[in-house]
Figure (cartoon, rainbow, N blue to C red):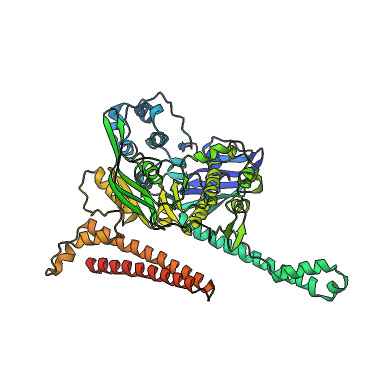
Length: 619
């Protein structure tokens, strides 16, 4: 493999921080490298360094003289006065770019819904991002350096981009450097990883999943070394506190301190584990939408966002909502919160419902202005249970990645990721029972995403999530729904089914997959639709399923397996709570037993649907 780009013993210093210290790296032909690390550790700086935009304070950047590097920054340099066509194509004659299949594919994949002649200044942030991405991708580059390319892209565009990058170069040619927090995207396009931390860069072979496994092994070895050090410390302390010399000459308080350390040396822990949070109790009714429609006036008449939608959201439901940008996901959330009245139909909100909303734009933080983080959290007196201990908001923020120095920063000066973590913490301190999250993963690094997922995974209330992060969506929600042409459609097959639907609509192909009403039990409507009208006297009926039906049944089986696993964990947790309860509190024990039986009944129902699907497939 030919060498393309690299650096040798590079050092970069900022006024308040050493970003890199004696870093040596190389990029060869065929490399597909994902760059990960905590916010502020230097991922974007590394891209700027390798692309030549930043001169190192020490060392040197090495580059093959003929290598062309294309860079996508987090912000664009597009002119507001240029049309979309000029911003993307420049002065290239139409007959040239229109005759290039690769350019046509890029424009169709990213800009099919954007007016080709619209001024760039009239576009939304997401549309500008796609225009800038298309501008870069039509170029002929040996190396692409992409900084957060999936920001503002919807699931369909992210999937298209992954496919494009996988096939852009022949195998063993070209190179890709990408900074992103989208773990699905990293696994899909990257074959190796660079982790940026503590002023250095450590390479890992394999995609994001392989990187996580390697990092776990690294942490295990570090923990083992620390355990050996602790054992040596224990032996030294034992000698100090128990030896004759200690009893004769050491002050008593030193001996007592040593004995305390020997008796209870707490294990080191780096993971964020939120096991319990005090939440307000939900009643039987949360939110019900009955024949709801929402339309907004336009110059040509009116635009229908939601069309006759029925949806029941119950206590403990965990729903994810997907759809293209501008389809109406945020409008649906505002309708559910009661902030927007429907054009037709009714929205019923339970009397005990307490909403907490994390918006894309973090509007609620603007009221704090120049207040420092320490001042903001000082206004909250509530304590939260974590690992069986009461913790103050300040302590919990520290577990969410805030240092003592960060606590003294003005809210307005925090990074995007810090603001999002602070906002999430503040809304949880209000003890809501319905949590509405609109793109909670924006600006968060992979470690903080994992921490937020652990928090959400154990949160006991009702959860509504809008995100383009497939990994986050399928990790923390039990059911997914899509907004398509004003209708809300249940997705038994998850995000993959949504992509199939989008592809079928884009190609003008009638969709063979059956629709399912949102308030139906997961998979039941699908299985009925697939088996409806089947002639039991014809044994070959099972072999005549269409490809779409087979895919749907397999997705149903996979979805039910995940749900049964989740319910199994809930049963284990309920049994643990039951074992810890007062054995004389018969009412509480009875409630735990009812809860366990209800979970088991759900498992039985899901298992039955799984068996029926397997039988239909002939497996």
